[in-house]
Image (tube, rainbow, N blue to C red; front, side):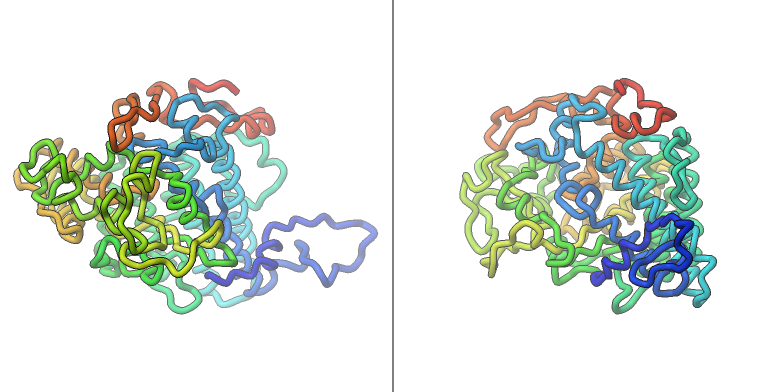
Length: 503
């Protein structure tokens, strides 16, 4: 999967016209008449669909992590990809690259997946491999649609091979799109294998289909179904928590037992810019609000615990704090972090950097040099999704405690106290998700689906020394969805804009 042949990828979407005067097919290029004939073509088609995950507007650049900067977790000083417009509530249908590009990139992926599904049945090839590839395509189509429905709500639902008429389709309802996602993932989970080996590592598995289904259903508050899907992942007995939270994100530990599905990145073929933006540019700077949310090692908040010392605020804290955030006085890249090393908030982010704490890097990582895979789905997330969904569906039963406490135990934190009410457990799970998944680009999704964004976002944001460095504004009647991009509206007059936005 890390050696995709890009010449073959280009051929996936060719929709060549048949010229009347031409009676023979060219032998040096692919056309509709010469492609989709062999097993090699089918593999090139599905590899081209995976390749769309690597683009900078989805999972192949800092943009995926910058979703943290539209939440109380992080700050971006330069308005990269227009994230500050969204954070400050001044975004519209045309002024944020994040809004425009995610729409386009997702539909390109859907077009590729639909091309595979629409053509593969006619190919004479091994039936088992054919079934698997079709399952992979349905998983990827579901993933692209999950991106769209999460940010924009209902969107045009396209399931056929790309054609010009699709450019005038109206929006389907959110429920219709979600139901199709669930259907695709059900069908994918029935044919995808539990594991891959060798060059196939990185492809979608049964566990990936079920885990994505659990996430989508939880995002829709379909709690019983979400809990059931997450429980199926747990019961596969394929995944477990990697022993060390910090080393989970080391380059040499890619594809470990906690990883359910990740985007394959590799320098120099398809690297990312994670390191240069996280470290050199400090473009995703953790906020004090995030740092203060980490508990003390006794499981209490900094306002409740007797262990907290304002003169040494990073001592006796949840170990995940210094495994995620670069704090002054700690070790990073083999040296002590100076007070002014990360100027915008006073903090830097370790997670998703290849640099280590006690090792001086052998070289400086430049733009495009980063190659750490971005993890879309991991087992800790599934455990917390299960705990949340089960708590919402049935209350804090034994299985809820077991799921959340597994995550806390790996971190070196004490178990959640017994006897919590459903609401108390809800708050405990929400905090645990914020801490466990900090810096991964998921908290913005969480505060929107919990409908807490209007509370936690309408505030000033401060740096480590308490200086106000910006504001956050969130309009609850509008901002739970992004606007449909203006270009899409101009190209398709049948699209309707989301409430509160102008065309």
